[in-house]
Image 1 (cartoon, rainbow, N blue to C red):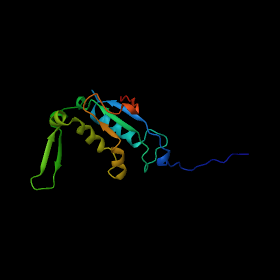
Image 2: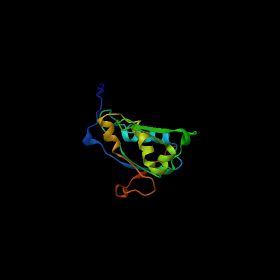
Image 3: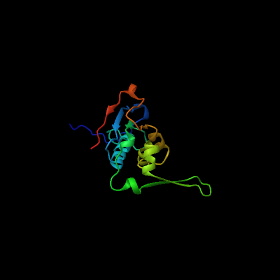
Image 4: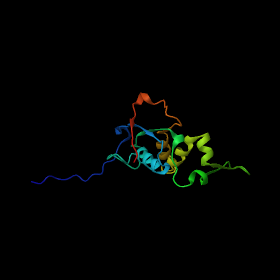
Length: 149
């Protein structure tokens, strides 16, 4: 007698998802490689239960954002462009200025570009917590350290 195989596709339900907390030390990490790994974990692609339309990802806490590394000459050349939609409302910020003023924004911008740009992406992005220094207020969640190679 042969057993019948089930070929049904598994679809995760939001209530069934177990979320973990991870902490990443950004000191010396290359921005793009780190952002790609963060986006993968936020999305939940590291889990076998991954379902594209369900938030199956985990929480990420990034510390030492001011010590992130940029490959090549990006520290001098890379700029971030924004516009207020008013005449003359162009704003161009260099990476060097942002590292000094708001180092969290650099990592957030890189990760946001790697997430889906829809309601699910906004929901995923809320699980990213970025801090300039080594301290963060999420010790109660007992985050495990995640190494990025």
